[in-house]
Image 1: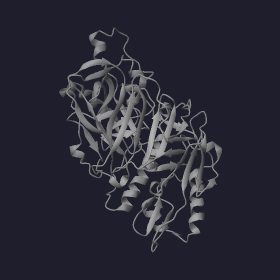
Image 2: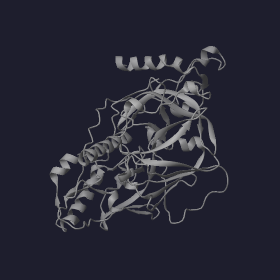
Image 3: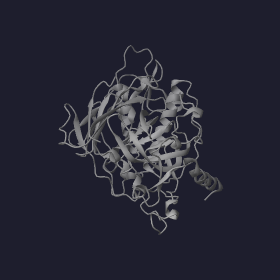
Image 4: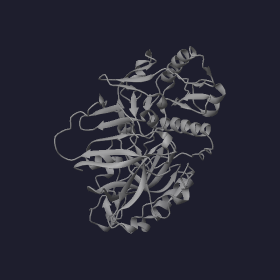
Length: 467
């Protein structure tokens, strides 16, 4: 262990006295953080798109190469969902007694829920648009009568640390009572966070969830807010709330950081299973692969049958569309990724088909803009009264088809250049890389009603104006 890692762990353990909390038995998760450079200044559209493209590619890399090493409600509930300039969507959740309300990034690609915590919270390289790193909202455990540090012998510990070793003594002894979960360190595509695990009360006006398993982060890098994990793990918000389904409709990113929102709808409780939502097309979730990497169990895999550009079927090798037993290949849906990611051998045929069809419209490639923005292909459309581009469509198992509106897969950088908002890793390898080959990001989900039907194991969607 490096001296910096050791000092961080010592600092975390020294903070236990700050909580003045009871010990609720449970355990911890840890992933290794990596150094992250500060985000670039987002002074213009090109720089902003370059930042979002890089962040999308980096997150895709982490979803494909997750580090999983260990170091140590009834009825429907609605919550407003806001588009943010850092490329994600945020919700506000209330924890504690009395409730403390904080913003969270809504993320279907991970499962742990965590918030910035205590007055000692530090966020490094957190200079995002409209985010003041010195004024990030934090949760104060000492102000909540329901806060308890998770203990090592709490069964929830094994949600994250299935092999955690606790002292062999009576749970009621003072020695065991002082044995807390080891601190977690979680790495995301754009940064990391570390802290201690708590048991808290998650409060909604309609109901509350007691003994909610949540992370109290003391240090983060490149995280604009806490994260609300909506993945498939037992520690996720949907699992802990016992939801039957949840849904959202993402308003356009052109409303980033404005007071414009849509509803995140959480449906749980008893009663008969809901019928299909009118007008919604469904595709079944795939059974998560039995990978050696447990992070793959968090993802929502779906079966993408084909991609079409302007009605032309783009030929993609089969192994990229269907995950193997190790979890390599296939498609996941991720609200935390901004631009959709495609492995290079999926991406290049798509680009070639666009270039072939767009070339007939006499739009030239804007190579210099591609280099500056990190996006491709980009086309010069200066002098055009209107722009016509081929339609991009994803066809899924069961016949569901997602036909994207133009604004979901091409973006104007100015009046003269338009770029495709899909990214790749530029890998030269011939075979399939580790992890999912295609990650459907939130930019491509704009103005779609998206329904995660957990009870019936299916994803539903329909195109609609979210705002």
